[in-house]
Image (cartoon, rainbow, N blue to C red; front, side, top):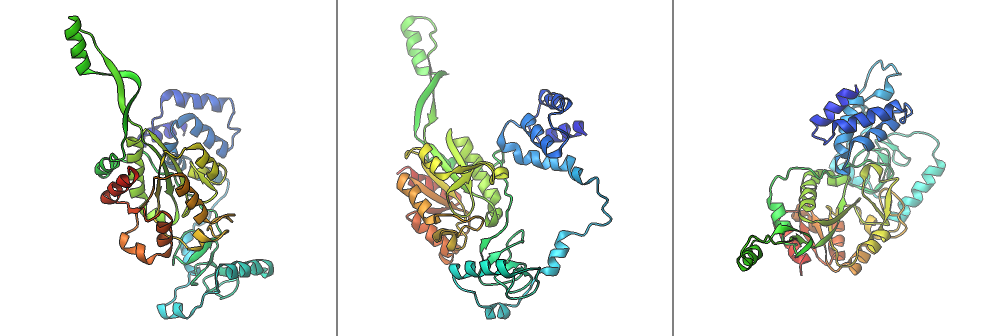
Length: 391
């Protein structure tokens, strides 16, 4: 099985060597993993993966080779697809029926009523209009419909109406090795360039070599530091939710930026910027980075680029506690204002079609907070954004 694991990793084009595989085998002989699947996962990942960008590929291979290992003790008589069970609970309404359902009220009213339901409800409920349940018109639950409510126990959105999501969701990191669909993205990014010669003298200076050789009468090789792009870039990528529709575009931009900018730092966020960000989506609940630490680490000469569709409930931007996945102490507007106060050069790249920006309230709010420096995630948009950052 372990040999198969090694060959599958190689087939997935992960840079795993025989030496690293033998190191893993020695670690297993020493019983470091303590015969637990979770310990073996982290041991093998630490031993075999040298670049965090390959975590996603590693996870896919690990799941393929060792999938279901912990479940072998149980005998499963029959498997019923989860989507079949979910479909039973889903509530489908006509447009006329949807129009008749009134929203419970604003943010404060909805959260107040949720607190009451949590205190009063004693069991499961399905198909109603009040309690936390499924397939109804209640503002709280899953697989139903309400103009504005809290989504609980539903893996993905359906109507785009939830103002808060009471679930823990898992996101994936962007793959930095993606082959770009077009090299023009790189060319557009190159507008953001300020070159300087720095570092060790390793590049042949042909003109100076000719001059010195002619002057001395013998070959005198002259070298100089390589010319490098000294622009420093701080990028924030929105992941999960509606951004799943734009993964390909985001990965292409991520790959191009890593190739073009030597001084590039990236972090992930979800929907709007709040008090923490993260580098690894698999550990975003355990290894967070305080946003204040980011702002104090990277000075004001960094160029800031946000990448996100800016599509969310307005409460997520304006209200403390409005974040869909946690109770944020300060509104997103405050954190975006702090960014623009510190970093003079900041833009937002939006992969959503520009024709929808005008009809999405949250997009208009983000655009205003960025002083109208929102650009489409297209070649023309990237080019315009780079021009703005070089002003």
